[in-house]
Image 1: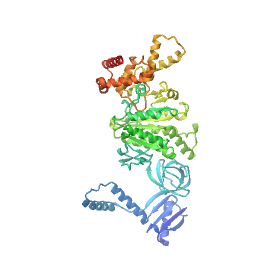
Image 2: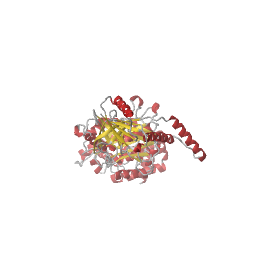
Image 3: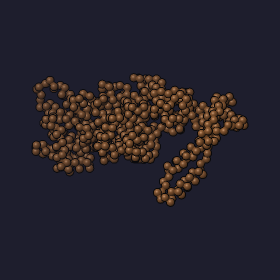
Image 4: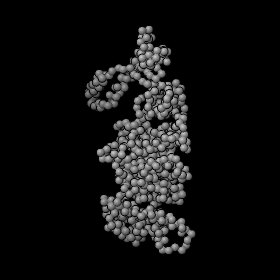
Length: 582
């Protein structure tokens, strides 16, 4: 076995014998080859290194210890601005900390890099490192233990590997991977480690949370009953999302998945919901555009953007959603409601696959490692609604998954579908046909259902799904027929009107009252005899008319959140009156 003694003054034979005796006791072997190295920079004392340990008895090491203690002391103190008191305060802080300071031989477990490449490091000598622990390389780069093997550990890097080479030293920190948290993160763009990316200066943290955290237990969860309104008529009426729910947004690329998430974030303005948007593997320019859109709508004030771009290393893309969830949990355990968007988990799975293959783990189905299901389940299970005893906060998750040519039965889509409480399926054909949001009514579902709807919306949207299903079926059978009875014509006109009403431009969410008014009028066939091209314009005018002349109806809907028969009759009467004016 080998050991290294670094000194300023050469040790005597008696001192060497004592060091050999200490090493024999620590390493459990008498056969030790001791190498002597002189280093004047230590000032005094010495450092003793073995393959996996370092004992620092040098003046340089002790100064570093003292600096650390004083740094913590000043960081936790509030020195008054009064100049006379500054000197007294500094002296009292120094005295208190110097009295408590005891020099100790710094005992660190160190390892040696034996292989590095593609953001992955294998290291020998760290025998007691645990999964998810942060380690520090001598060049300053941080890494996380991702693979614990019999004779070495696999580490993923959170920085570039250009300064790490075979023989570099790596030190255990004893800390789990985590992220600073606090209210100062609202309105900011940060990376997966919590460092600011927006050039607005440092963020004042109020705590530190591990990125991996156990999900709340069943006893600590409350049933989902409060709506998380998206402002999109097609979703709020047919596939309602509740606070604490996990609703998957799934579809091919360029079908409007991110647009739905963005509209939902914008619609939370003034509703006391904090939003966390996690961008995984996207272009930096795309993220910049999204941030700019959020700023223009005023949504950035209550939103945190966690960015791991396509140019970032795979390990940062891998931990980004966990970091975003840690931030969301900070707010949830304060009793606040949080909306988190993972955009998207397909790229997250790809980043994890890249890491796993580089760590030489066996690929499984479709070349994904066997634990990729657990990867997403332990992430999404952390979203829930807590009981009042636990603070009553909630995390609502909107994970996004990209499909290839609409294949919902592929490996990653089926995994995430089985974890979530429903999915909003977006279809390329509908999108290209101008139906935006391009929600497929047949394949989309919310497993929470009406429990997350207001009474008013539930009553107004009662038959919308059935009417649309009947319209689609009838449209297929009647497209070649010219002779139709009046009842069929009426159903087709109603279906066409509904399809037009469900079209909604991005960035124009409807309030709950506006959605209820639209649906009540649609069910009363107010829109059925209007040309398809004029329906959206007619609805805009109708809603403006209600805001101007029938504010009492809107205020009653918003305060009672119920649709009484007299209110329903008043809506239809006002709509007919508006229609007759034109």
